[in-house]
Image 1 (cartoon, rainbow, N blue to C red):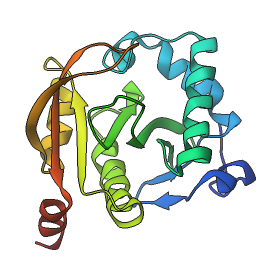
Image 2 (image 1 turned 120 degrees about the vertical axis):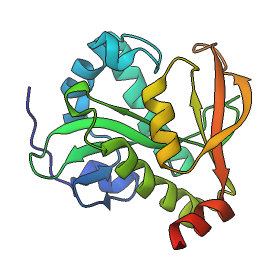
Image 3 (image 1 turned 180 degrees about the vertical axis):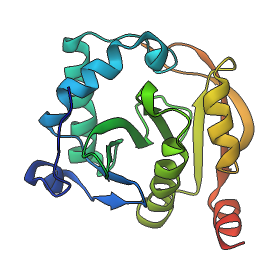
Image 4 (image 1 turned 90 degrees about the vertical axis):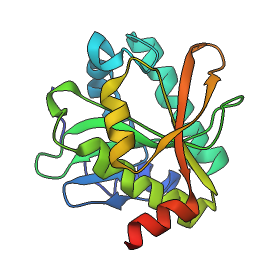
Length: 191
């Protein structure tokens, strides 16, 4: 299903900022995202490294968790909207659930948009925002060792493996913690 979503919707504006890149709009999730998010979560390949296939009740809980994080912490993952079509194409951004191994900027994009650079483009904007507005000193990306696509995105962002960790339940998987410091990010962006 193809949804046209306005960037400045009242629900999204109440929760947090809207960021724009050349091709994307990043904004907090709204209920208009539910059906495309369900389709994304039902795709076994797209959902493989982000907790697996999710049912509509699980997607609803995930969306509400992210909206709650926006309301209570002032940050969470953004919904990713393709400017050209207005279509919801994923979620990415700052993320730090209880017990998480650090201040993460993560990503997940619908499979028919893989290879377009959307994860790198959106994550770049989200990392800039996290360092500039949240005051983070490090950004990490928790990536399972078999997830070569996300490893490539992390490399394009200038990240490298910092350590290993185990994600807390319900994920409960071993991951490589990729990342970089604010100083390294700023130096790379300036150069």
